[in-house]
Amino acid sequence: MRHDPPMPLPGLFGLVLISFVLGALAALATGRRRSAFTGTAAALAGGLAAPWLWAQAGWPVTTVWMVLGAAAASAVVLTGLAALLPRR
Image 1 (cartoon, rainbow, N blue to C red):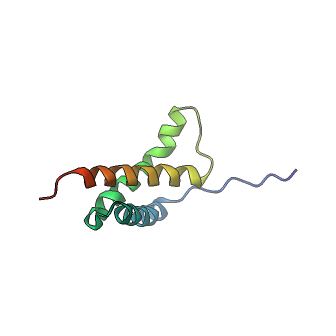
Image 2: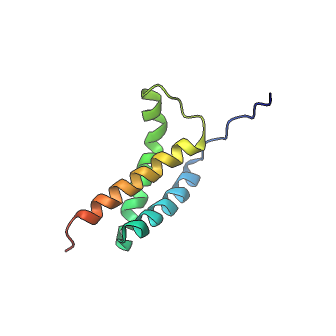
């Protein structure tokens, strides 16, 4: 049986780039293009907090997909909440 080494986690620069893309996609998905910064900030916060939060739950982060899932989920949730707020 072949065991591949785990995929390395992205560095800070990679996480910022990934967060920008996820934030833009979340803003497009919710229909609030001006919320791209909100989605980017939420994705960055989710990606930075994911390894610590998953470790606290007893599941160590072993793949980049776990970090991407947490970043995408936080971007969509916060951008969706921003879409529910009344516009000025």
